[in-house]
Image: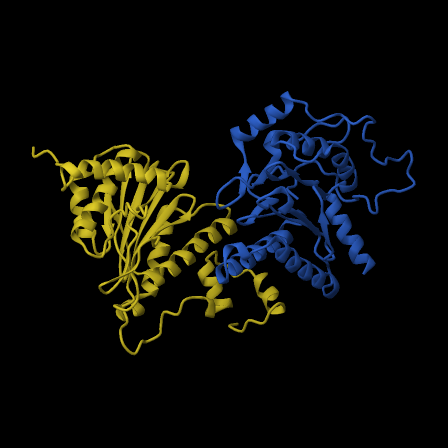
Length: 256
Length: 281
C-alpha cells in the first residue's frame, strides 16, 4: 500500500503544477501546458470545471466518466440537480476503489470546482490518488512542487480579486522565485464565470488572454510579500517534500 | 447491460470508453429506460387529445439567423396553453423550434441539447452544422412509429456556421431529413401563411433587426388565418419568442425588445390591417 502511494506521489510530482483559485466573478484555472490539444482543464457541466495533473490517459478517463455522470443526471432530473459535490464523491469512490483493489493506483490528482450564484456558493474539491477529498477554501494547487506553489499562493491570495489580479497571483505562484514565467503560448487558462449565461465555463485564449496578461502586468496590484517566499530548500531541510521527483527533469516538453 | 444498480454499476460503466461520443448511444446502452420509448403501439391514436405546438418561422440575415415562434398550444379546438415556449437554445450557436405534439417535442429538444453538449465536451470541439442537423434527423426518424400513432413532431433547426459566417436553416419531415433551406422557412399549422408572407417580406442581406420585423409580421399573418396560431397577446403581455444567432452566439430577445417590434407592427396594421404591401414590379 505504501509502495503504491509512493509510486503515485512520484508520478504526480514529476509533472507541472496546476493552480485553481477563486476570484470575484468565479473560479480561475491556470496550468502551464505546452500542448494545445491535450487539455488539463476542461468543462464538465454548466457550473462545474475539472483540472487534473498526472498521467494523461488516466485523468482523461476520469474526465469522460465525469461528463457522462453529469449529463445523465442532468437529463434524468434537471440541469440544476448536477452538483460538484456529487461528482467529487463519485470520483472519490472510484479513485479509492482503484487504489485499494488494483495493483497500480492512478497517478492523478484532480480538482472539481463549482461556481455558485454568489461567491459563498463556490466550491473547490481536491481529490488525491487514494480517493481522499479536500474541500479547499479559496485556492488549491497540485502536481509538481505542489507544496512550494501552495506556499506562494497562500501568501499572495486575497478574497474577491479581479480576474487579472487572480491571474497574476496564479502565475506568481507557479513561478519559482527568480525563475522565468511560463510563456503565454504554454499557458492553459480557463474560468468558471458566474456572470455567463447557461454554461459558465470559458477558455481564455489568444488575444483575450494576451490583453488580460498585459492588464495584470500593468497593475502590479498584488503586494509583494514582505519576506520573499522561500521554499523549504536544502538549507533548513528538516522537512523535505515527501517524495521528490526522481524521474526525468521537467523541461516542459511533456504535456503531463 | 441494461441493469442499473447504483452506485457500483454506475461507476463501472461510466468509466468505460464506449468509443462513441453520442449521449443517446451511451444512455441507450447504459440506462435505456431513461430514453423516450419510441416503439410502443397505442391502442388508439391520441394525436388530437394532447397539446400541439403550432407555428415556427426562421430566416437568415447577413451573418446569422433569426427564429421566432408563436406562444399557442392547442388540443383540438381548445387552446391548452397561451404562453408555451417552442423555440429552444440547443447550444451556443444553434436553436430548434418544434411543431406538432408539444410533449414529444419538448423531450426531443431536451435530449438534443444534451447530445450536442456531450459531444462538444467529450471531443473538445463543436460539432459541424451538418453533423448537428444529421443528428436531429436520426432522432426524428426514431420517433416515426409514434408519429404514425398521431404523436407527430417536426422541428425546424437553425444554426450559425462559423466556417461560412452565415446562418443556416434545416427542416424535416416525420421520417427525418434534413432538408437545408435557403433564406427562410416555416413549420407548423400556420406555416403556409407565414411562408407566403415571408416570400414577400424577405430581403436579401438585411440586418437582424429587419429580419426580426419580417418574422413578427409573418407570425401575425399566420395567426390571422390559422386558428391554432396565437397572435401577440397585448393585454396579457405575451409576445412571440425571438432568438437571434450570429458570430456572438445565441441570444433570446427580451419581452421588452419583442414588444417594441410588436407595437410598431400593430400601429401600422391599425391603418393597413393586412400588413406591409410589397412592390408589384
